[in-house]
Length: 178
Image (tube, rainbow, N blue to C red):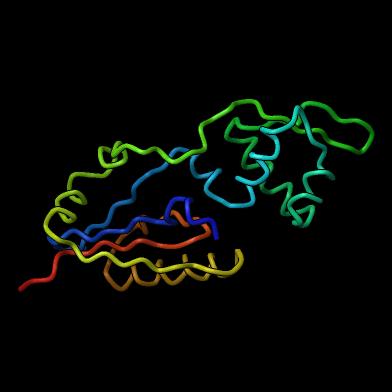
């Protein structure tokens, strides 16, 4: 698991309730950040940054993933404008980086400005924070999403405000009452 990748989902519950139960919100991440948060895609992107181009076979050998999963990851990187299949030679597809983006984590506190005000208020009030790692493969991630959808139904949340990435979930709840 890549310790530098963003958290899978940031979930928080508002203290106020109404007829529909507690409100929940999702913190959105741009597509490029989401695409590069997966360790396999990040590794592929870093490899492509280091060279002019790589074939699908070369990428498959270096990552050790199946051809199906490799194309899935390449499709995500391509959809977000990071790489392109710029030439086909026989049965070989050749890939290159189309846009270079900084990969180092930002050292400033700019991320705080992207957090919704109600989450910031919870954090400043001493909210309870829990990290739940999600380990395993895509089936485990899908099972986690299904479990969270079930929890949303229990709490009468209309739409599950969750985007899962492969490493974990950060849950922020109201501060404990003293």
